Picture (cartoon, rainbow, N blue to C red):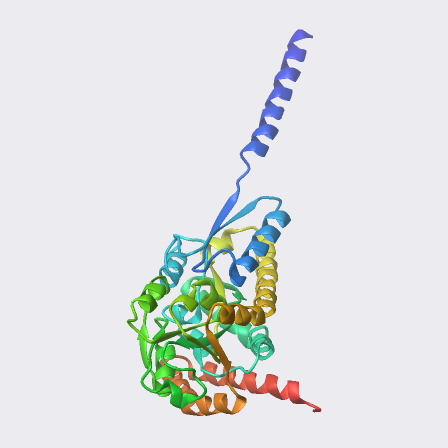
Length: 342
């Protein structure tokens, strides 16, 4: 009888230890996201919502850590780390992403979109999904398009009210061939400078101006080193969130689904935050002494005619021509649907 009690007690103890160890030593998946912007930038705010959703829905089985201000490297370097598996996730502008997947060049077509609604309509449709999925062949899982916004020009020479005002202006661009081609077509002298060196470049007056979305113009305190902000809106610049495909595929299916849903929630929230604050950012820049001017639809059309055709031709010679044609057709189709019955 005593032996039976001893056996039962030992079995219970072993079972308890097994259950306890299962709780204590349950595997937690940790994912790092490299971000070039600050914690208060719209895309990072969207990623914070993504983090909250994923961690709550997986009950802590997946933990997200966001490293902002290029702590883990610049955009190009971060995407390279994700591709190699040294990093789980990163966001980057389309320009740096074209180094790895030249189909992202379609996002660098100047004056392709006239509004946020038009840009979101195409990116959230079949062609946007097709663009995200196209990176799987190089080991990247495209999850969503985090918001960065329309890019505008700042400079110290004069307000930009049309293409003629860009003549001879030395302007910093991203390290993106199509961005440089756009400004060459508009008569400017583009000079590529990494994001991490941008403020210093402005401060030392190495160039006359630069181009960025309003959120970046404000956060980088361009009002300290630039006189004019011109709302050219020449390129809509989302920041795709990409993950290492092999890492993503190893996750349980339910966790994959949660990450995909969370990415879309974060994407949409970052869009709304950015759009809601832009008018106030203009007022803040003016309060800091910058002169802000908007461009007429006529001026933007003149710019489009001067640069878009040459850039599209260059993109077609560098990537899948059929994909570019399908992208442009999707833009036309969306605009047609918007104008239907009007």
